[in-house]
Length: 96
Image (cartoon, rainbow, N blue to C red; front, side, top):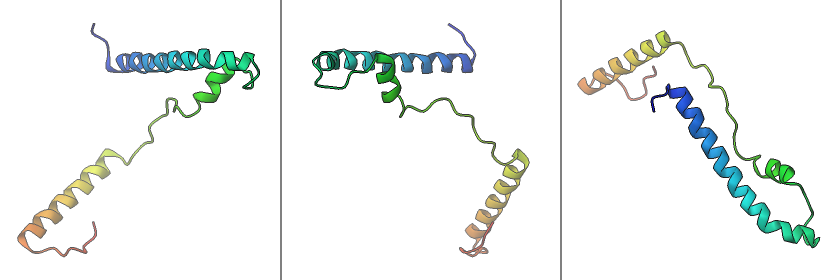
């Protein structure tokens, strides 16, 4: 199957989410008898899922980093400094 990267990644993420939901369902089924006997506070699976899925991060947008031109300029300065240091001409405390 050939898919664009983003679509493939979305399918993988969806698969992990479904697997996590299946594990939660199994856990809920084990706790359900205790909830019926009032040993535990009863809650619906929807509430149980929301409560237990809080720690799973949702999709977040990547923050924009510095522009490419700035990164290239910074990398050139680092390279120049390393070359000078290898020749013995740069101090260790020199900032970029």
